[in-house]
Figure 1 (cartoon, rainbow, N blue to C red):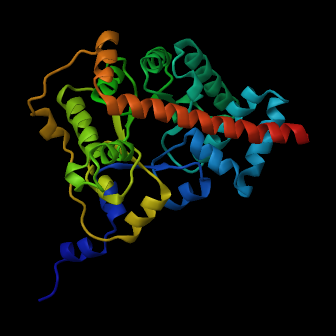
Figure 2 (figure 1 turned 90 degrees about the horizontal axis):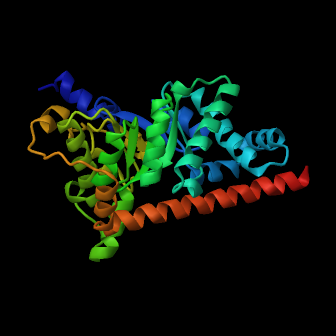
Figure 3 (figure 1 turned 90 degrees about the vertical axis):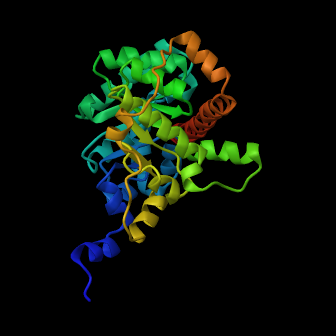
Length: 326
């Protein structure tokens, strides 16, 4: 008996195709060639990814242009460099490009706002409208308050390093455009804390965290986009099929492109809207207390900011070497 067309499609359809039918795929990389290969809707960058890309010979021209533009001012050069990468990426993806504010400003609301405005101004100089850009900000209380100011000015924000429901609710309550709740880093923490080698996909603590946030948002009508991030394997990704967006590194996109089979919808907005999930009001006191009670979220947020800051310093060192040679 011959196979039905549906059965044949299930066997030949790649997992990335199946995922795209349920979720918007975003490329998590500063490698412009990789973005072109996978044709995602959006792209996200961060200081670590920009540092990695800036050391690749094929992107030397973007670094050199920023150095020339900045005329010896390291801060200006760094901003221009991030925008140069972002501007190239906007030529490939039709949707948003996320550009991150200096992580060292994570506890300074006013400085974060000013930096974001400067980045948007540089994009404007490059002929790119602010509607294409998400300003990426660490989800400290100060960062979230900066997003509140920026969103009112029409500057859309991606609040990153989300490890707890407290952060997610606080962002939604100020009208943030998008959040990046992390998956793999949460799993890393729990593996070490519980002394285990891993988890079944459905019981992965990172997967459970994003699922909880997604269901809360859909239950209470929050419009903030949920974009799962920081994946360690494809099982985590597939377990979040149905999420608004998923930002995925090229190596994992390659695995999903190579694998065939159907992808099951795991997150469902309609089902979430019917769940019994109490509403939580998160003001500053509640935010700080909830974070204090969550050792994982507190540690991973601080660690994430430290690591991004380290890579900014590494990138600044490259810039300083270039300045010295000019």
